[in-house]
Image (tube, rainbow, N blue to C red):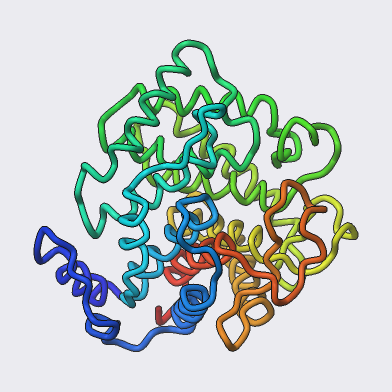
Length: 360
């Protein structure tokens, strides 16, 4: 795997202009392991069949981040993310009525991920401008922009990565302020899970994908932050607290229920939340934040469930709950229900699971 990646990066960075090679010109030269094969299968199916792939919305942005993780893991390139970013001129979605709506900032994470292959600082200007304006607003006392749990993944990784990249403590402090506001209002410390938003506080409803967004966000932020960051321990504490709760909520088939605390409400497999939890747990083991002996069986069970039940021979990744804000949204979830963010989360999970899998 490292040899494939080094060859890929050498080819991509051979000039200051990223060259789009023929489809098979820089494909992996060594056999892919089973985890990698599943990643490539799901990725190819989505690229060929997924609807509405052009907008720079949070759905497509999640897929593009996962797509680049697949490329870095397998060495198999498809030249999808760069044209997508270029077609959107590296911009973020916007709405004057909601200038700092976190969903509109999700594309920033994909643009940052592209810097690994195509390091052009100017491509981050729109993201820098948005973050700078939001930081200024936070400093003026506006701290409730992340008032729904999805926001943690939509915006927080970009704040963390950009703050470190630009050595901007202001970015990191604003990120922490926004996180603290979300945590205060939405995180149930005793249970170790997040409510989706204020409507659900005290309801006993803990949405799988909502908690998946938060769990992924913690892993991504911890990846970006230096060891001496003053708030790192707090993010790690939330991450571990969630992980141990999730460990005991997993179903025998490897999935997590769409309503984590109510297994008989909307029962059945659900892939997007499961993929996000798998990514977080595997990342935690790979980075020594979670004990391998305890979490590896759960990770393996989750991947086996997704790759044998949700992933079809065609490459369609099914059982993905549609766009929703609670367990009851877009129900029922079926074997043919798929979405960009589900595939993206599956690819991110695979990138971490492959590191734990002998032969990958």
